[in-house]
Every structure is written in C-alpha cells, then in structure tokens.
Image 1 (cartoon, rainbow, N blue to C red):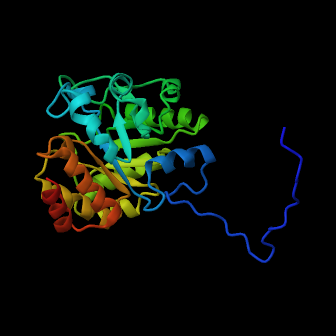
Image 2 (cartoon, rainbow, N blue to C red):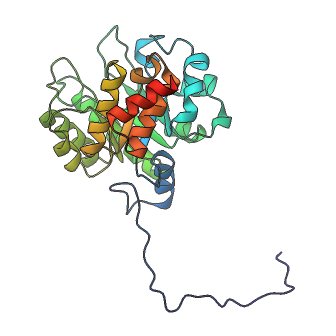
Image 3 (tube, rainbow, N blue to C red):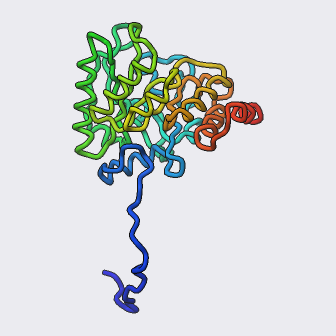
Length: 289
C-alpha cells in the first residue's frame, strides 16, 4: 500500500494547454492496438521511423551457406549493430543469447528447401512465437506462382488472424521466382496484396520505379538485400531505397558475406538512420576497415 504521509494534491494539470494526440512513427499503424505499436516500436526506431534488420534465416532453405556456417562466430558479433534480427526459431533458441535484448522478426513458415519446389510451406504455431517473445512474424508470399500463390496468401491471412489475437505484427515477404518479372508493377502488386491481407510490414526488393511501390503500399516497406553486391553498390542500394520511400532494409548476404561484416552493417546503419550518402557510407566503411 502507498505511504499516505505527505500526500500532495495534484496541481499541475496544464489547463491552458491543449491536449495534442500523439502521432505514431510507423506508417499505417496509427489505429493499431497498444501492444502492436509497442512491438513495431522495437523494430522501427522512433527517432527516424526506420530500421536495419539483420537477416540470417537463410539456412531454413539453403542449409549452412557461406556466412551462416557458424551463427555463434559469424552472426552474433553483428547483432549489436542491428535494430532487429530476422531468424528461425531453431537458430534463435540454440544460438542467439537472450541477453542481447534485440527484437526478433521470426521466420514463421517452412516446408521446402532449394532441393525441391520452394514455397510449399505451412505456418508455425503462433504460441511458439509468443513463447519466443517475437516482435513480428515473417511469412513468404509467392505472388504470381500458379502452384503456390493461393496457399501462401492463405498462410499470410491465417498468420494475420492469429497474430492479431496477441498483437503480433506480420511481415509479408514477397518471393521472386523464375517466372516473375522483377519490376515495379510486380513488386507493387505483391506488396499491396500483403498489405491488403493485413500485413503490418512488407519486405520486397528494390527496383526501378520503387517510389511507386512504396507510395502505393499503406504499411512500411523494407527492402531485401538479395545477392551479394560490392560494398559500395550495396550502400547505394540502401540509400536509393530510403530516398524512394523505403522504411528500412533487411540485409543478410550483403552484411555477413562482406569482407568486413561488422563494419558493413555499421555503414548501412549510418546510411539508413543518419542520412549518409553512398560515398560517405563507403568512406566510413573504408575508415573503419
């Protein structure tokens, strides 16, 4: 029970000040519940509204590919520089120290590997995401794939239903297959489908005309790094995407396959959050290297 001695009556009510409703720094999230906003605030920096996500979920379809052979040695030293970690529950439980206190975007669908047809996936139980304290759940969509489009959209829809019960946002991840044209028309369609079906975040690829993709998507778009690029080109990719409306990046191979991974993620962070140009970002990379 509170100590009742020296109980002081309230006096500073700001009666001459008009109450100003607080805005929210994440696109499309103003009307979401408090718990959903809290999780999104862990992912997107409240000062910039942007995020640098470190993706190392590649092993769930590729196995121990270059850069993720030893998560403890190759990835964990990089996590301190990331705003959010994107990984699978197996890696999270076995290899990521809970003391990091980093938000996790949990890869939440699985089913096939590079040895077979991709995207024939099922969802993990949302209760496992809760037990792992996930800040978001990531689900792949194969828009334009005649075999798996409907199934992956259904997966997203179910994930949104389940995540909404517990205020866990869903990130829709747009797949790119051999038959899919990688242009603004395709990525604009795929991103909008994610948002229309309830995704709170969309992960897609940068392309010519990306400003239209970002403008037409009512939730934050973060770009995938894709294949390994030379460091300067990867920084240019980040800069152009942010300038064209992206709310952040979700980089994997362009970080952990860099010649200096810890330095590269710091340079990316500076471009995304501090507004460094690609030239300045590359100079920072070279200086720190």
